[in-house]
Length: 458
Image 1 (cartoon, one colour):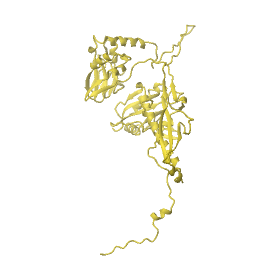
Image 2 (cartoon, rainbow, N blue to C red):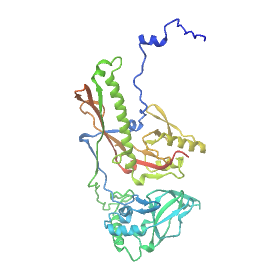
Image 3 (cartoon, helix red, strand yellow):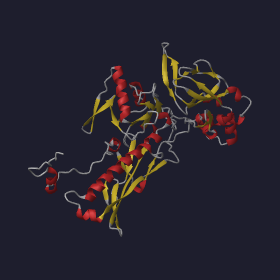
Image 4 (cartoon, one colour):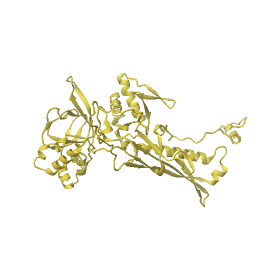
């Protein structure tokens, strides 16, 4: 056998040399950090006492919510109490009657393109959309069909039948865009029965005849266009008797650092400082998540149902964003998941449309109609590839959306965030309580709008 001679080095290896060298190192890196545009663009209102009360002009309840359903396999049933979301049943409290009424709804299935109701035909039924999406169209002034909007899960039409015994006609054609499951209650099911519903609906109708503007607010009596010296109307502005109050929410954690680490390994970088820095980043990320998704004050759950619209075809198109923008004045920002922004750009490219750019805090961002389109990965994308797009007007002066926080906290580290020393335990571990207090408020309903059913994978 031939012996293999081991290679003899002629100089010191780099691996050994590093034992005597001072390395060049970075500060700790973190993938979770995002741009957090929502936290940057929200105007923050100082909230002393931890509570923010939103006083509004008195509005009459009109009952135009959404209905919730349950299902056993493929069989769908409306939850009886959810029927009070229909305008004619708002405030109705007889559970027995509601349960009997819910039992009379019959399930029907419609395929894509099938008409659910036709313009001009008798409006002889109440239709609840349990699942799917339907388009509302009407003949325009020149005979072409005009799209009025899109109905989605939980929405309904024909509910006026509960209040008006006379049969009218459909004023629009409702066509299923996707496979739709609907629950239908025919007029014949109501004839001769449920007189108590008629009485309740008539009482509500009398209340709705009170003078009010198009937003449902109590009308302010005015006179205009007169001459001479007529008697002028007297008026006053009424307020909501029980305005909504927003309490500051909190995100907290306890940061623990061993005293040995803090004592011996602080050069050239302060271990406590960098531990705290990354912890604060994580709390700020959670804070933005809560501002979007919290069921109490999050933007997605606080958008008025009248300010929620559905996409016409699935992917977000320029027409969809125009519909969203048209529902409010002075929209300042649009927030969307990065995948939704990519889907919108694909739709624009397919149409030969090129969105403009907008300057936001010195950064060039994509925009639409002069409104910046900001990425926010806290807006969820469902397993089916659907998400939402948020449009909002901001600032208290414009009756928009505002962020809530309290500054001047003990041991404040950043505005609205404090770090409090909790002591040293018997194991030599130093503990710090890191807390951030926050919430968000929508001052008037049209300050916030949501485009739902946005497909990002098509």
